[in-house]
Length: 170
Image (cartoon, rainbow, N blue to C red; front, side):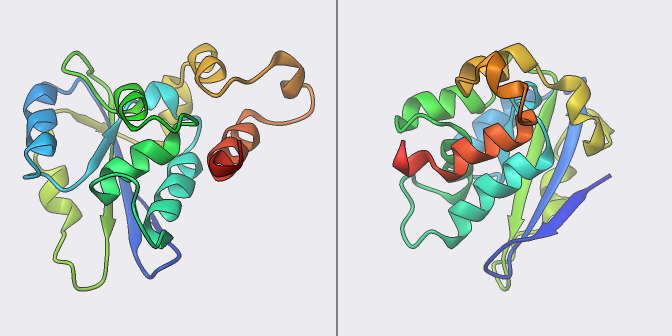
């Protein structure tokens, strides 16, 4: 099932979650070659689709990108690091991944069709609502520098989104 939501500039973000993906290396290479217009991230670092929506919205409304494309900008925005390479390595996929979250931003008149992207995934599509099952909470706490004390007062998603939204000010 596709998760779909409108962003701040009349764009639409669409996400699909996959497991048992057999062609991750091929997909990664296509992204690097810029022949596949999407962002693919590790579901183990995603608490909720809203986390990705916040990162994507920051990318589409930005007057100037820090990275080379909107899709690398989404990965960069997911990270609290201001180091582009570290951000892309942490949130991007490597060839050993078997579970992936695929993100496509459709803008008016850009010709990017999410279904063309999604058809290239050789894996089992599962509902995006199952992200929670794939999230590695310990790794997320480490990546976002979340303390146990924080969880006594706030849900993890709130803490993660706050860090994404306030990255420029940290």
